[in-house]
Length: 166
Image (cartoon, rainbow, N blue to C red):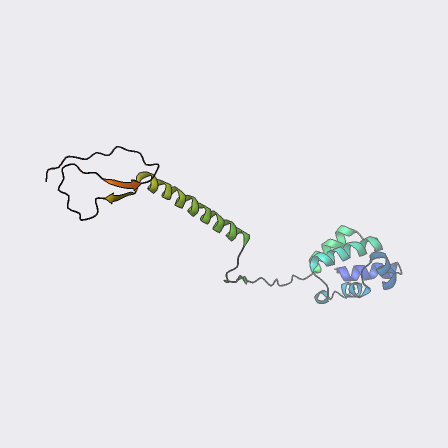
């Protein structure tokens, strides 16, 4: 059973094509062609690149492309893939646009919530009232009392005093 290297070498020799001429036709380095004929797979690139080489060489040497690819798949040894089961994902903190967006949304939400809370508290709380007369702890003996003071200019309401006997 012939290998892909033997078939390529036989076809090249049969057509009397040199490595230099085949390199000119296929644009593949002659070193790679020698390695393919010698089936030195370790010094060649990965399988997809080698399959492209074989397709070009088969077309140039008029070898059946499907047969050549089948032989390559049979002869090309599988390579060990270096798959790292634990990827090198760092645990370090890094600032990202996603984090900026989330932080912006949280700050905006807190600002809106704070504003609404402030408005609610000012709505339900009574206006501030500052009494100028009578003073704190002043003893009043009159039955009619005049109270003076100030409050928020926009405060409206009815003041009601109950008559108390002293």
